[in-house]
Length: 242
Image (cartoon, rainbow, N blue to C red; front, side):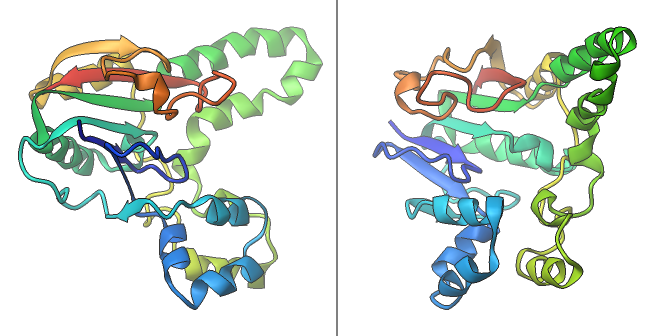
């Protein structure tokens, strides 16, 4: 059994059959003998937590490039909140690469922000905001949940920093949009399944955080927290086969 965990970030799996793969700038910082000592002096808050959380059992690879695995060599491929960060043409190339490395019948599990769920929450909250001034004060968050990741031009964790510190961190991490931190597209169950079937995947299934055709999925700890809650709220879970 071989499973790829693509774009894993800090959410890795220690099981021997899982290959964790990511291309986060935190990985480059941690692997550089000089920068890994400088980083804790420069980073703060969420950025420092992410830097400390980066595991050493990660294969560094830019997912916009061909996957370093032979054809028909992988039993399952998983990625969570990765696809929406690619332009749509790049997303198609990425998905076709996954199809290439999967064995016939192999499972492809995709987790993305659920655009349908976010939109329904927004529409439902309009009524609550009209009836309750307190709800109106927080209504903007429901708009932000949909569009903020698509329109912002810098990393969320640097936007409120002093100018000099912000410049330093942007030099280290680069532009948020160019490095793929922002959302380039959003998906719902119709659009994602349509895309996957057009690219030749078959047998689409809508799943949940704890349901999967991947054997012993819940033992991997990728879609659920230790308390069994979903690792990422408002997510859409889709599985297809090659």
